[in-house]
Image (tube, rainbow, N blue to C red; front, side, top):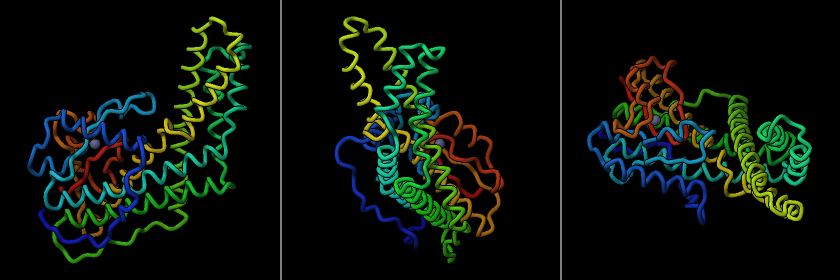
Length: 333
Ligand SMILES: [Zn+2]
């Protein structure tokens, strides 16, 4: 468990930190704060194998607007697990922002924010729907689902960004699995999936992001329209101004800094692919039983605690990553 052999498969982490506050940056800050609150390092293998303390708020995405999590401080880990977590973090750091950039470019290219906001406002004014929420959901679906357009280069670029992220995460997970299983000569097994499999997996991940963004936009429209309804003074005079403000907010929620579905669901995709890689590596060297491993402190979410309690699992029964920012791992049982 303390092998420090150099992994044969490394992800370049040269992407660097994004400039200025971004969803990734904010998430990282809240991790660090959360981890500090959790009492810091616990020591020992249980901790070093641990997961980020993903709290219930994150688990309930996409219906909650606040994300509070704690992070492992990589520098405090030792030996094999330090390597495993650092390598996985490299994948997140390098590929997460690329997924986000590609998604926002797709949103900008495909979504008619001004047109759909105007249509939504008319629907609300004319009471065409049972309530604001219903109107907002209909508008959000029309607006955001326009991103499902496989003929567009931005769509293909977003799929490619996710495909690269998934491949890097699977490869890193395989390497981690071999490292955790102990010093041995085995090379990482080849990824058994075909190019077509990888593309459809990446497209499915993109569609999860699009659905998450749809929910976020529906929530934003509902909130903005409700705020306007309460602010009835001089409403007629301010209609154009309010419409412009709504367009600006919705643009920010689809292709701007407050778009968060790509960061959260991209993260979940990377985490899930990493675990897939670990399982593949264990299977490739004949291991059949695997345990889910959390940080074991009070901040681990209920789902991950249950997964740990129900361990071990046969390879095909290992649970999928249950929420964004989960940093649980698996180990041979
Ligand atoms: Zn977890």
